[in-house]
Length: 403
Image (cartoon, rainbow, N blue to C red; front, side, top):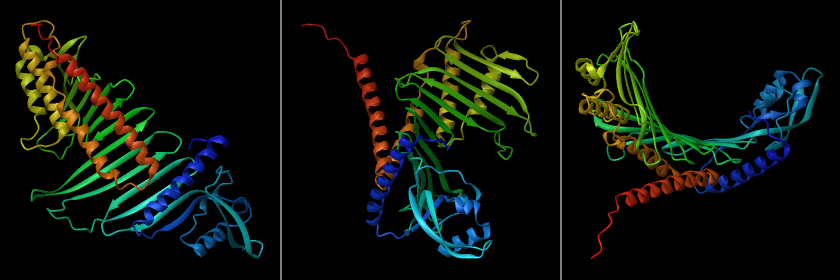
């Protein structure tokens, strides 16, 4: 954990306590009940003067109010505490009874907050980090009228604009072959770098420049009899979402998992389009001169006909676009890069799904500071979209002749 100077930690504690007060007011409107637990304890007598059995007895006496192991095992300062309380316990080493112990606590949790559909948990820390999670109850029956269960973990730091949200969407499909469908989404902001994930798609965006890096990785699965390939895809997009450069590496695997060969497609504005196959022995074959191997690579990347996996679609679209570019320029020694060949619409769709889900949970989040950070982030994304729209309309604008 990062060590804060005294002045910064005073600010952190003040802001965390303020968030706690607002959260308590919010949660009271739910008519919810919960337990409050104090953790990350500091008390030198618990560390130096009494035994572990006495510390555990004190915990049980007040259970579940306190967690005191941290104070017993370490005498290190926890900094400015969120709470101070006096506990009464015994010292069996000296025979003293009913001793007052002044304890400090750096963390406060609220738990046991149950509703019909979910359980919720808060954690407030004196380093400025606040966490909130909602877990959908597994026993709650889903219906086709209400097919979704949403669980999420969130955190933010009161000292910065950073935040993290991880969402799990559990959906009843109505399909007997695959009764439930799971989507995993995350969005995090750190130092003006926005990272979004939708299942196996990762999009890293620099909000100050608008440049994006898209990554997709699919590991080899021995159990998947329909595929013997693993795939790594990377692409860099310009602020207007046009492709600057991209690459796919497709490894084919033997039954024992070892790599048998690698197909690689590379495109960039500077170097054009390249496609090669590398054998297990390191022999390179130019796929632009070998249509049979080129076709084989495409077969490896084709998603199942009914696949709705966005990662599969992005990779397949990119590979198809690469091969189309190759097919149009087979007579050329260097295949030129034409950005219009590459459609990144599936990437935009993945981003839209993430933003849509964040907006879906935003209204039920009981932390003012977290909602404020989400709103600021969504505003930045909206402004970026507006700038792209304005730029696009200027590009498409036609000058009408004077009459």
